[in-house]
Image (cartoon, rainbow, N blue to C red; front, side, top):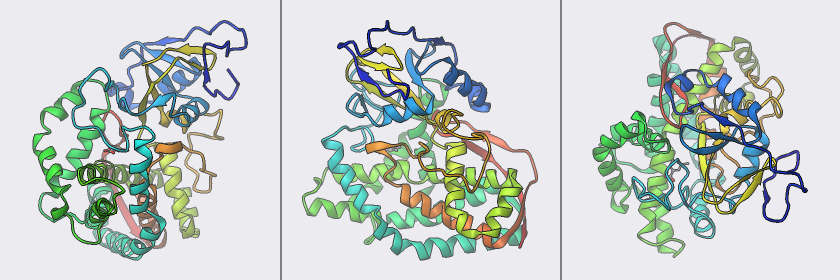
Length: 414
Ligand code: OVV
């Protein structure tokens, strides 16, 4: 293969006549508590073992270097999503819920649903939301400064998205306590059948019932993302049956991800006071400071693809119908791609990070996420002088998401 790791079709001597390289087998379980507690030595081992590895615990391939993760993300014909982007292969097992019409779909079906959600979450729509999202972030930080000490996970990382996103979607006030448990379930369900996945699915019925109900047109307030999706059924872009499932995608992926993203950013600023000082000196860095936190912490750590044909990855052949696990978090700290990969730098050139993915499936809600992140970090930049960690930090465990359970902090006002 080429040095940059572009996967090549096999069967036509694609390795230039060289024999295929043996693929290293590793015993690392990337869905274990020990791995979640400290993934970084394992990420390095995964990257250094080779361009592609075989993970014996779950009988899947893995890519952890930036070049191969980027290449897999950008070859959706070879590395498909329609057989699921978790461990389970939808060609062999029944999915735990009806597949997503955007995440778990390939072109041409994906192209049509993607176009609808892109319009619903477009730059024009962000312009209409910006003033409100900024005002709520300012008020949230003012309130937290008055309190001084609080848990930044519950009171900021969860509270802020919960105070803007469900309203933007058009959800009724009742039942919103199901939203974070449902999202936690969705992201645990991408993982293997371990305790995290099995216990989440076992308790999922009330959360699934709530979500299914809120996806219906009559339950979505006019002007919101949900009503906007249903309006595309009137123009024929999607069917009446597809609209609720596309609303479900926003309910699955639109809230918890930003909770983890904002949590990551606050955790970074608390650990890097020099970077908070630079942000305070230039609040216009807020958007990039959020982006850099997404790179460094990679709230979405992994996704799978499934091979549609035999393919060469880094000089080794991977057969058809194999699951390939992409380590987004490892790629975002690959020293082959990033200078000082493990440090938080609010002025870093973050473009190219794969925390939102890359290619045709790249996060369709990224503008909402960035608007929320920028609003919170801009408020912090203008109003907060210091962030001190003031108690024990604990981790929240999820098969896909990386983030904290508690982050006790004390703020001082500027
Ligand atoms: C990116 C993402 C995560 C989880 C769920 C979905 C998408 C969905 O489309 O349901």
